[in-house]
Image (cartoon, rainbow, N blue to C red; front, side, top):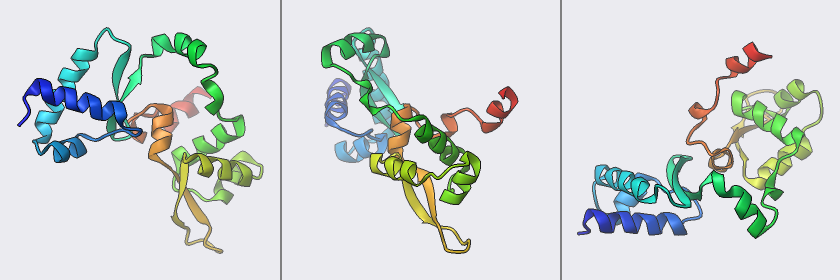
Length: 173
């Protein structure tokens, strides 16, 4: 059985090597320990990382190690252009509609945007930011689109509940 310090170090290694967020449940199952102990170790890991170049981020239902945003300018300069994954305005519009109205059909998206969205939907599907979650009962049984955990990671949020409410935008605009 690992002591707390060893547990913290193992969790840090897991998070460092994992390409995806890791849940406390998955860590607990792997280490064969109680989830409460994992949560305690996560808190200890956050304290251990304080003042360093890395931080722990709760995102998409799990945790991942990320670089601190205040060092992004230095990282961009060292590694080159990191912003190559930016989305077009059309993609952002479409993603916003899907986020707040999901599951949603292509026709529903196009009725809000006023333009054909087939190409944008394909791009978002290819990037893994949305997926097809079923078929509508409407005539022709069109596909229903919803956001993915990769979308949550892209935004850096843990769940859709962390996003501003739609009515906050309606009041503003």
